[in-house]
Length: 251
Ligand code: PGA
Image (cartoon, rainbow, N blue to C red; front, top):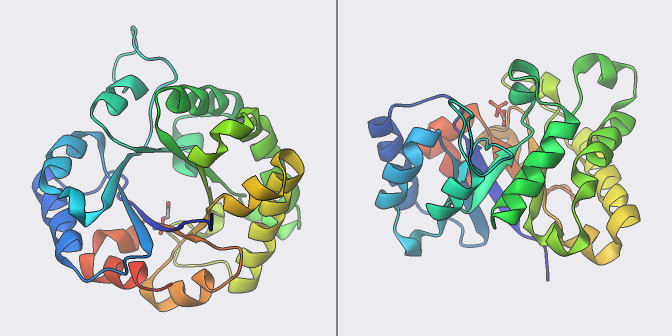
């Protein structure tokens, strides 16, 4: 099984529901490379109305941007992975650096969230990536390895088919600055080798590792052309349907 090429949009806290429906509809109607798995990470409020507008044949999948680690309980304002599963939302993004920073999510909490999501049959897009000072010190590989060891590597091998990794250097998110294709390839290969050590070659070869951080149509082709980059997690550029379609077609 060759690993999937995936372009996922992360809409963050952008768009009203009407705007979101319009954006998803434009992406649905656009010309799309059939080999690209397309995922839209929309706000919680948008999941149901956007899902209703997407035709099964469009093969556009939805992702939540977070979920709780419990299925129910007294957790005001939280969203349960069981609720997402009941809504037939296939994916959830976990460990995004904005949630680690603004919502104080640490590796131990993320390990619980990953487990809960998988137990509910959700596929997880797990984000990792280093801040600028770590990159400048040359410690990025070690930093990412720690993130994976402390949360992702609790996942049993049998569940790894439901994991997508998104490497997102924090210094490249929303800054207009991207990792160079060489920088992306270096760390993606390092991540794949970590997977190989933990789970063996077959799982390492079959796990999609996406790059995120200021991906645009002007740089997507070069980054996606690297042998260990299997697509992208796209923030700002995912909010413009034409731009996002160009990225989808950048393989
Ligand atoms: P960006 O965001 O493309 O706007 O840098 C990426 C992300 O946060 O996933």
